[in-house]
Length: 156
Image 1 (cartoon, rainbow, N blue to C red):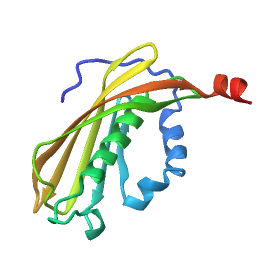
Image 2 (tube, rainbow, N blue to C red):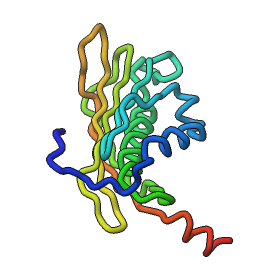
Image 3 (cartoon, helix red, strand yellow):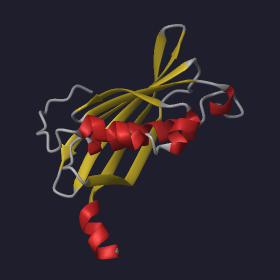
Image 4 (cartoon, one colour):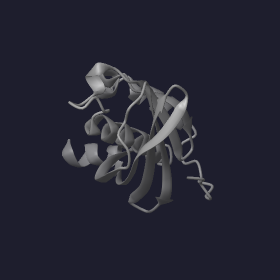
């Protein structure tokens, strides 16, 4: 998708903050998924497909694709919230278009609408084999903005 919107940067440190949060992305590390591009409202990541990522028919497992979608959409949304805010996924829809057969998975996440409390995102997943990309998934999500400072005051 080509983004038609220009978003306002509410946290000039968003890239450094995302890099810091990646240190605690334990499941993402376990999968071998990494972020390759971090921009305002857009994040792209990838992983080298290994046997552990496959299901019984040797396609990339749907859970791997859904997780990759959630990660890039979540960090794309996070790039647009103020400092000390975060986002949590409230809705995730994954449409499987083609089987994932290949060597590398690429996930591209973008923000489509930034609301007061909600951030609407989409992701596209591609699997590459011998340099050819196949579009395997399209996902949408709704992220909820969380003010962590306010939450700490309420929850102690």
